[in-house]
Image 1 (cartoon, rainbow, N blue to C red):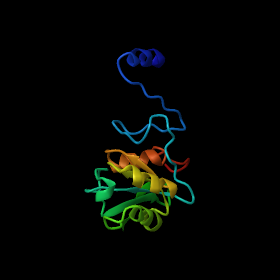
Image 2: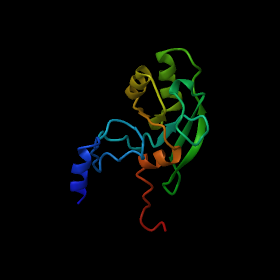
Image 3: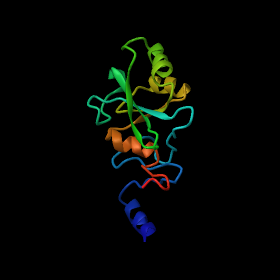
Image 4: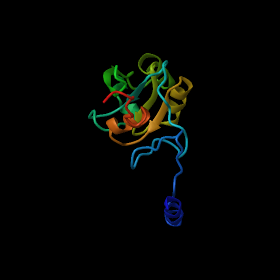
Length: 156
């Protein structure tokens, strides 16, 4: 039934394929190319960085960020805001992004931003930080990166 609906819709709309390895972005989201795997928090990089003007939405261009919000797992495994870290001052070219990666994003697997230039994306990627472009709610988007809020057995 779903396959038939997908086929009918494909005649009128672009239909994106997502596998279990590539978690679907939030509705209306544009985290990256459809079907590409999203970065997953790891032991070495358990956190996700976010740039925001209001603390609720991913709505800032990376170059405008004065601080970076750091989200990560609590003891119970659920993601929450851990801290806000100062971002390097504007100017400085590649050195600014290198400094951001080394001093601010050293424990982050991804950076969520509304927009970012190609150069900062390349510099951060070379340092192990995937830049994801979206204009969604922080809580929901961070939740997707941490597995959609799945609870461990016995936590209810």
